[in-house]
Length: 189
Image 1 (cartoon, rainbow, N blue to C red):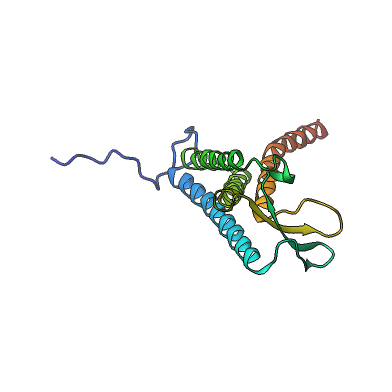
Image 2 (cartoon, rainbow, N blue to C red):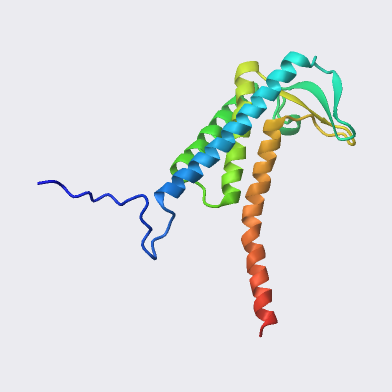
């Protein structure tokens, strides 16, 4: 006698009152977050590879006139050259952060646009700078701001900062929605 299939269909709608998204949506979110991380990582590594082969250390070339210049710098520290010389510790931190974010994405896929973007940017950026630390003992930075003095940075740094912005937006948006709905409610009383 055949055994009936008791597994729920992935295309079936979730029963009303059941929390959480359908498994296929979780998989789609997971894949899109990982794809973003991959795009960030590949862009970061290709740009650094180009800089290492085409831009002598310390040389400055205009990139976006009045905004950005290309200037190759090796950074043995973290953001803004903090913890300079702590290569092994920072390489380990990059590895731990990357592993933790990857596990987060795989086991608890983020819900919503902003957390998906944040985790994708964070994973790609952490992996990009981590690979530099493990392979070269330093992170290759090459984007220098022109109109004002600011530490030289790279695409992985941009992605990590975008992750912070996305996390902040994700936290602020519900507050703005609640504030607006409260003020709309008062206007109608």
